Image (cartoon, rainbow, N blue to C red; front, side, top):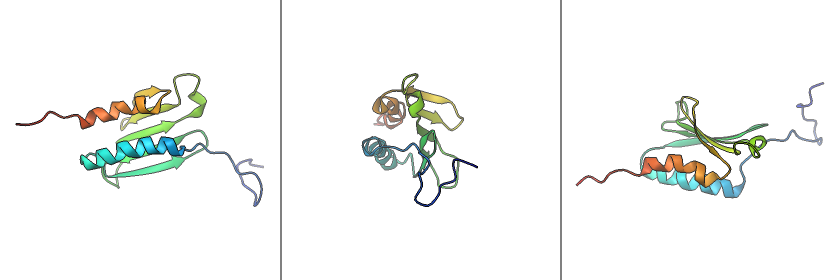
Length: 113
């Protein structure tokens, strides 16, 4: 019998999800990127081993970036990662704010005179 099949009233399979404080950090960056016209939509997935915050330029396309939380990597490379559209890990670490700085660089643009 499959252990993933939940029974009514029985134990539910555990999933990884973002905590409210983590979402506040991510949504703060998301709001600034939307205001800058870089991002337009997002999606959140809570799976068995990973929580994913996907960022889209348009709704019907592949995500520009995925912000992943993998608690199993907490004691190794760090549980947070930013992954680009091509699947390349752009930044990985233990501190979410530090990892997200790789995306904040997109907000810094030269000022035209």
